Length: 342
Image (cartoon, rainbow, N blue to C red; front, side, top):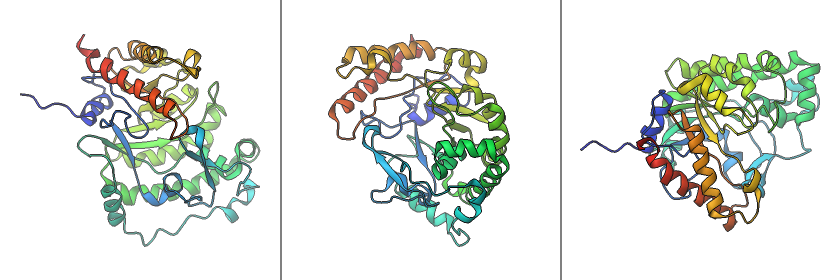
């Protein structure tokens, strides 16, 4: 009898451009049904303590983060409390911590032992930061960051180069200790409707540094995934230049069918579902939620190259939100399990 594929193995088939046995359910956090998740994040924990540890409010750069109850307690930079007022003075404000004496093997061993997932069942995606544009915005706020990009591009590039040197050093010294299955790059460069800036500005200010960061993975043959919310399809060709083969959460404000047609199974679409239309109703029914999941799978899963990704946000203790997300997980598990066997 053939061994049953794990969630990890089924998902990794996607990253190789193969059609999986079932439609994976890509979730940010635990699966509502208690099942193994295809992918889970890992990386040097000292970089992420402000995002996940209660009581830790500042990141390594000194930015204060606060939880947003309406978004599952995800943390964001505290509004109107920015550390960098003038991009020309970034050298005086942004100071990388000294990592010269770090024992990377010991750090990785501790981080891996603390995982709540099985490496056999779940692929590990190694990640370092929230993105160079998002870091700039966390230092200055969106308005001032965008003004700085327009008025002082050379200073922005100098700052991003400084950040990138720091993170590339960490990646080079630690990634082999974690032995990840996937390399994660994150940057939310778009709103629901449009990017924050042009592809030309992206290529000038950010892309060269992502090319350097991605080289750490490319040199090791580790597939790269991109996390980018909003209508960010304008940047996909640039991501592809530095090796991206998977994208989440691939929101429906992008022309996902055209993207799927253009790239085929060489770019995995993790998404295809958002809380829009009748799904925004507070009393939305179980039938409506599940039918929306079936419709997304029918639309984007044929031929492979797709994992369902999407869910309802709300306070962590909100039973209504939890119930809706269970409906989603049930629909993906039941419908996705046999989709490729029809």
